Image 1 (cartoon, protein in one colour):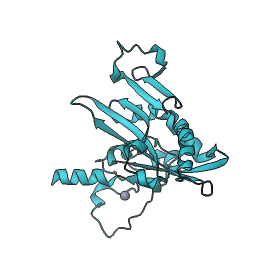
Image 2: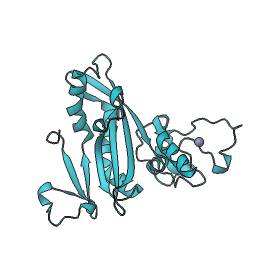
Image 3: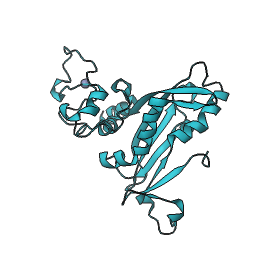
Length: 234
Ligand SMILES: [Zn+2]
């Protein structure tokens, strides 16, 4: 798999693409290099295998692709951010780490500027897959995209100020003092195309959304993280 899929190395100081031969393993600081892998290459490698296993079928060529991401502490000072995707059609392997494919990995924090830069090739791939699909083994596969992460990561990627700001909600424009009001008609009122077109007209949005090709209805909050936070607090 490593040979079939191109890996790109990025110098995080200069935002420059490095050739593997340029990287001097004796002097390089691993904390300054990020990695990108082509999602399209991974899918071209993967789809024939999933078809052979009977997980994907030419008669139903819709692939449900879920993007996910999070920051994690790998030591007391080192933090990594990892963006992965998985094929939701592969129901038996949803929770299997081997079936979550990394497209971007970099040392550092979850910040809008670095994410919007380092994710660019992945975002282009997602846009391509959504618009054109992929032709593999005589079948035209089309893609439905989903995005799931914890609230902080979703907020950064949607371009929202921060998770504890007054207008915190990913799906509607409620203010934080409203969030115990059960008489409100709570429904998804935002629309990704409108946010992408004019994010400034939405309360709390300070940047354009990064994953603007994924519909707001398909942005799903990760319940596991919420439960972990709640039990921590209790
Ligand atoms: Zn809301």
